[in-house]
Amino acid sequence: MRCLKSLSSLAVTALLLPAPALAGAWPQAAGTVEVIAGATYSESDSGFDGRVGGTDPKFRKLEISPLISWGVGSDTTVSFQPSWQRLKADNAAGGSDKGSGLADGEFAVRRTVWAEGADIVALQPLVRVPLGYDKGDNPPLGSGKVDAELRALYGHSFDKGFFDAQLGYRTRGGPAADEVRLDLSLGYRPDKDWLLLGQSFNAVSVGTPGAGYGDVRRYKVQVSAVRRLTDDLGIQFGLSKAIGGRNAGGERMALVALWWQFGD
Image (cartoon, rainbow, N blue to C red; front, side):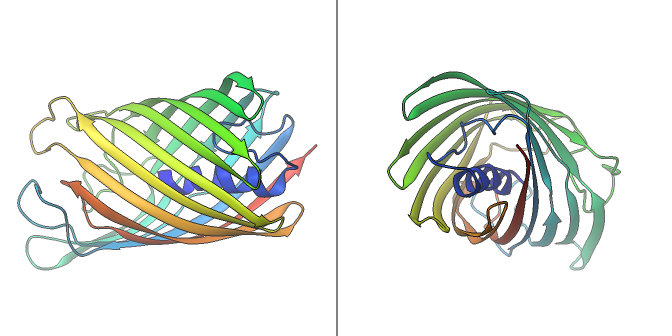
């Protein structure tokens, strides 16, 4: 649940830590642990042009994906995010297939490489692995392959807000083509208890895909609000919509997440 993961990192650090705004590229405070419990519900009844096989994807998905992050030092953050899904997808016979269970998990390390004033740059390698499901199930809960990504992150903080830009290259296991990803986030705090977020999540495939796969483009926008409940707890709620693409579904999503922060 890539978009929720990005939101989690942005919202927790921006609301629960002291000023200035810490988000995206900024490291988590040394010695602290964040546990983020997030859930999303998404659905799609149509797709964008270029669908391989010619039919639009129709599905309903509930996903619970807790993110656990640890500030190892002043410039390094380690995170793990497993995923559980319940998925219902229409099939070619006019019926529907259902499945539920553990999906894919992500392991990442984010390290600051340069920081000066309100600006910061970080690098983040990430590995996405299957968590024991059968890739032959219908519908599948993932590709059944290992993906790897290297991401560069840039953050700039300003009075009452921040801007975050992330550019990544993801190698896909199996026949799916590799992807270039660009995520943009703008956060604004009208007061100390609220954070408003506008975000854009984009992916474009590169190279030649294998049999049964086509070139892919996905463009999504997301808006959300985060409310501080206590010094260590916050809640986020928001909506997301696919606005364009190729070989991609017209997904709509609602999300809610709680964050807890422990440690120094």
